[in-house]
Amino acid sequence: MRQHVNVVTLGVADVGRSHRFYVDGLGWTATLHVPGEVLFLQIGGGVLLALWSVDAMTSEAGATARPDGEQGRAAVTLGHNVADEAEVDAVLADAVRAGGTVLVAGARRSWGGYSGYFLDPDGFRWEVVHNPGLVVRADGTVVFEG
Image (cartoon, helix red, strand yellow):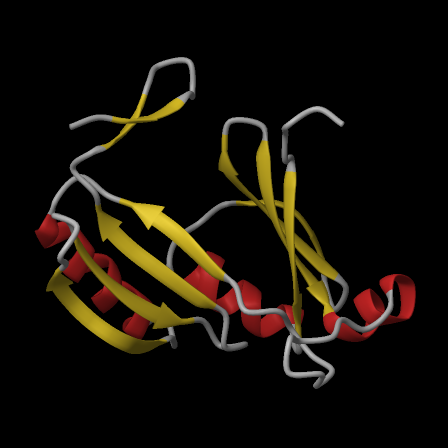
């Protein structure tokens, strides 16, 4: 199997609510929206975020089990790297205005960066981070420097 991901899919309770949060609230552009079923968002070169009705997802793919044995979502954090500390705080504020909830306010971290966390309306955790060592090259390759 080639080391590659094209789509990250999250099961959501209400695709319309996800559209209101990501598209209307955060200003992201929908690549494809099938109301009530699925919303695709381009999140990088060749990478989509799919927000799929959790009922349809579990009907097709089956329920997932958490490490504690409970049915539900696996523990996941989606990372959004930004240019500086001020942008971390600005994105967290944007998420709140769009209907999200700040889980952890922006703060300096022991590893040398600055990050905070928010939850989208379905409880998916996003890390908004300024990691000065994470560099995305022009070809899309991510490297860690420093």
